[in-house]
Length: 522
Ligand SMILES: [Zn+2]
Image (cartoon, rainbow, N blue to C red):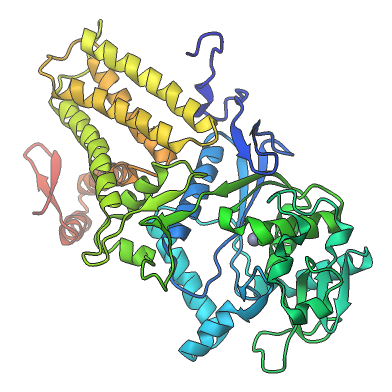
């Protein structure tokens, strides 16, 4: 498989060694084709993902979308790219009926029900969002800009669009003039008129064309979130915030723009129109959109009673099993999640947990084998170990091949299972260790950990082990310092070190001849 491409995978052991990277391909929603990924300023990658509207607890749909982009970011970084990952927090301007461009601000509506300030509600759910993402092993974005914190940038962008003739003020609101942007609809393949039936009569009166959309809205006096603008008091539309913040932090052209497929229209489409009309540059090079999550074949919604928050899903399941479940589907594919509301249990996650247990089982089997195996020896490895080594090398190649192919995590996970099965077969067989068997088992175990770690999996085992190793090394150092103190006959200090370690559960034992050993208190 690696024939003719020597050194292809060498970089992933040492990404700084100057090896050129083999291309990653992504399915680009803009061209509806798989394309080789070439960032504008290699190796730097600017990535923008539409973040949550923080008016309620994060749900399984959020888990699916953000685990997917977390995995893509992790993989790009693993491949040596320097990714700047920006994901906004929508805390103003997202209306209850976004398709019609009207309704009430979702955050204000919910805040009124709860009788709290809208910004208090947004803060509460921003924290809840990060808490849930942390549990799922989703690394925090590099920048999490809030819309309400970027009103000057938004107003400047609206002004620019007016100056360039792409937007017009009408009765205190500002609309984007769709007729000035002939490429409108190029991402979602929607006809310009498609939204017109949804339009309200009031909006029609203010707009020149039914498909025009609001980028700045006039605020009624009682509207809580409003700011002064050249067009009077108002607040931004939802779509304009992403254009303004992507532009501020990533420049006119973003390498990767991500989001859920459900926001392709009007949200993403409008982002393109605003940004390209303002900057006269392509807004996004690669559009990556995640498939939707359904529950029992239906759209998840409060009214259907099938709305599952991440918190609920984790009541009876581990976060790692949920992450593993989500990654077993390709990010662009839809998922049909199973949920038993009575027992608050998901057969889908239960199944994933069993798979995860198999991977951890292989790590344990390898560790046990290594503990019982004789020390490293010279000479030829056994035939079984050679077979394991061949499997490891193949798994390594297959894993990167799968991930390079549009981040195909289901295929990558299948590779992990194959490697785990090979480790299990070897470690639980009764073959006596020969030659370099030990090094081979260690390498296979480490390979499984590293590859799974790229997906944000099996980190539990790896982290615990490295934490234990670090602590052991620290204790050995402290014992060495204590030995020095004893040699200088500073017995008060050496006794204090012994007593302090005992207080934290580390028991020192001094042996005749001056040697000191230690153990953990039970
Ligand atoms: Zn957005």
